[in-house]
Length: 358
Image (cartoon, rainbow, N blue to C red; front, side):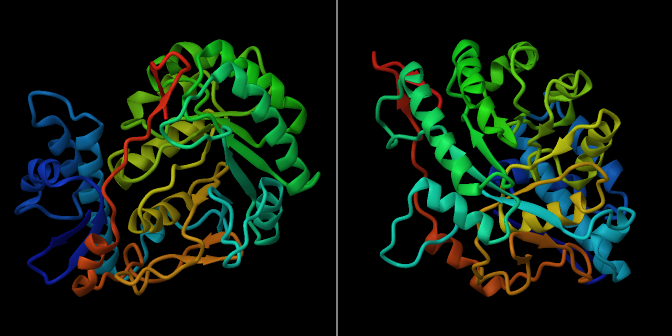
């Protein structure tokens, strides 16, 4: 969902996220307000309801917050990263979440895809947990052996100095998650992501942390900072997966970054829409701790965004364009509807037919 916020000064801010119903609940708070007062607007939108915002509403709040920061940058003629104190890095390193595009008619093996990601300049190659076709049986105990073999192949693909990571997609209980982590330790992963269900993370990840040496990351489903601060404060994760607009926008992301910096935890945001990705580059380029961006656009153009991401050789760069540095062609926004397919149900089942996580 592309969001625009118009001002009486003739400036329009651009954001991304939310849904029609959640945006309608949040947008009224902005009417008549000064966009430079983004903190006060954020607090009022968050507090002024009977129930605290859930993750869906935080997503909408984040979309509007991105637009406010875009307005502030455009009003002052500076990029958002300058408003946040200036860049602390030359670029944001990225990892290839789906490999790189193979030539037409060519199918690459897992090892070849990993090697291609390194050759394209990415910092790391990301693989799934031996993913069978959606809708089929996923036997976690049996699949651990396949995961170990896949990780061996990927390590050979990236080479001794390359990096790789694996997303377990929350499909494992604590026991099987430990089996996976122990099985892949010898292949030296950059991180193991989402080893257990989000509902169990606060109790299980600290236990897992004591039983394995692999770096851990979690939190692509997290909303606000209160979802994860316990794991960060206990240094039970090496990286958080908090992203935009999910956390409530740049206003909240700066606080997430401060918590992580305090406890020497890095940020590896979950991939998101292109406008929100541009916002992440602005925001995380000012963070002093470790950053690795998940990237899956492959440098391909986005027709309704003639100016958006500055990506080259596996790296995302900031730019000096005002605001988020994004230009939206509103006349091409119907393109989203033309290329978006109906959402699928990501379902796996255990051998007995019961559901496990996707």
